[in-house]
Length: 211
Image (cartoon, rainbow, N blue to C red; front, side):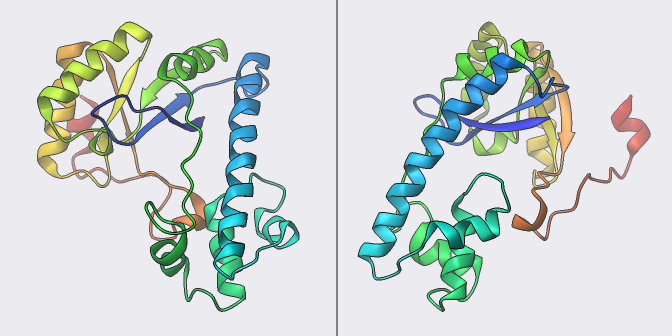
């Protein structure tokens, strides 16, 4: 599986698309990911420039130490800021430097909805919207947007999400049924970057949920 940050659309907030059951060797998917990596690299250069202007120079060598061969992202900048004493924690680094609207924040490159859905399908995967609560909390806007996304090829939504309020889960399940989308469940596990979130989630009435 894979999680992609993509363009949310006018009037909507954060849109993360899950590609489930993908072939990681898909040439079409990897060409698509190369574009995203290039966008991330350009963003990282801008973040480093802004931090240097703020008196917090960060080197590529320091970032690579924490990235461990993976893509450099804001949490790695946060760890380097902590090493130098410019931040007391990852949370502090985001609140003072790296978060939305902060002095070193740079928006990410976000591919289009159609391109992302097509890339997932090209890799033999299922395209699912992650945590719809962060896309919109307006039930009417949710349904309008999901109908349009279904026309683009969206297959499902993560209707059961660990951070949902009970009413949100109920409404997301209803919306999926009304629009004709599959439903999935998830905890939003992201490894050490989100240490309070476990892999997987428990359901109090598992038999009822599965039914």
